[in-house]
Image (cartoon, rainbow, N blue to C red; front, top):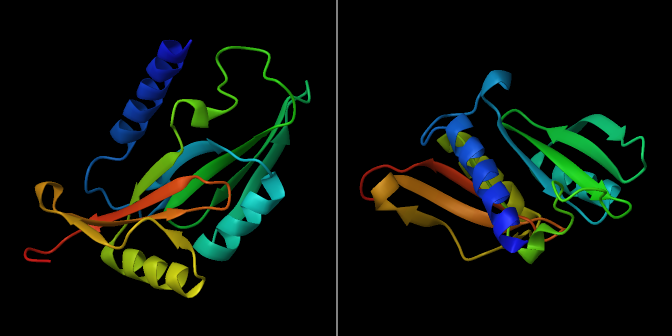
Length: 164
């Protein structure tokens, strides 16, 4: 069962990587980073993303079966589908608790000014960070990781200048 989930997660991760090439700047609606995550409370998670990342709720839907509800939140550079399961999922194609296999991280590439402004805002909000700002010379990127109120990790990347 875990192997099936890992295969699905690999396919999702590969699709996300292909849709946002390394170093791409997500600056228009057609170039937004996108991901979907499960959350314990849809309203609470929506409020966290609005307060901390400046998103707005752009859609809401509820499954006819009542098994799940979801909201899509977005800002200038990303869209995230927040999924809340209200009952046991009827199929093995839906991963109810992705923490079982470790998928709770979303990464987005942004331009330097967005990176710096987001970092400063999150620091003022006393958001939960994993470490500080990191530089990876191999991919020429600066990055930081923040944890949302559901435990999901969001990693922000920007191009680094030589010697940073």
